[in-house]
Length: 271
Image 1 (cartoon, rainbow, N blue to C red):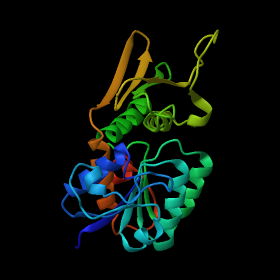
Image 2: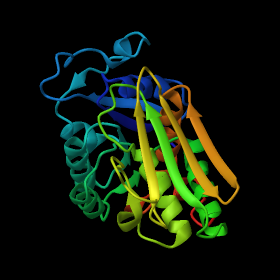
Image 3: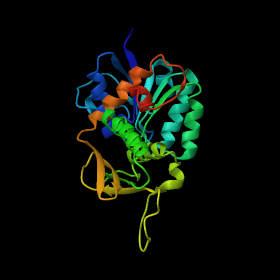
Image 4: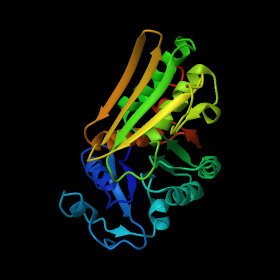
């Protein structure tokens, strides 16, 4: 089979540059294009040079449509509005779309789900293989323990992150809710301030910390009577998200259109 031709969306950002570098290091993959927003001062720059690889002949462009038409897929860690637009473009030509974007609204999710009727979309709040294993463990532990164990999710990221709770924290929250057989929307406690009273039974709590250059740390706590279980993942380099996304792209190649998760990619859906 020929090399998979991938486009990197937001190629001048921290995650985009990491993806460009990771593609160059991964057998079976080739960089087929690189996009950036229309107002970027880096349009026309060489994606390889920006990633510290040296020139690779792939210039940043704001016009994704012709790139997607000739590539096999697009890797997208951008912003909600851009991700929805990329999903529509992927649907037009039945391509692979790997979505690592966070902060998506229910309306965004609905549009992406519609695009997945014609595109192969893998969407996850975190592409790390380790984090998705953590989510599977969280679901299993939540299913095993009874309601006397309270669930709290703590996350910390760098001081430039714009959404909270993080997409990963929400991923873990959904996993805990699935294990408990409840809807996260009605059980999430995302903010506590002032005289709150006792903790509401069945809540899945979230705490968000921001500071420094932390790539990402997540802990799921199951606090029961006289004992506590903590599941923790610490990301040390963004390369883990890039590797997970590329693993997902290779898995998605040749699949039928649909909306998939990293649980599907890793075979953990029934764990």
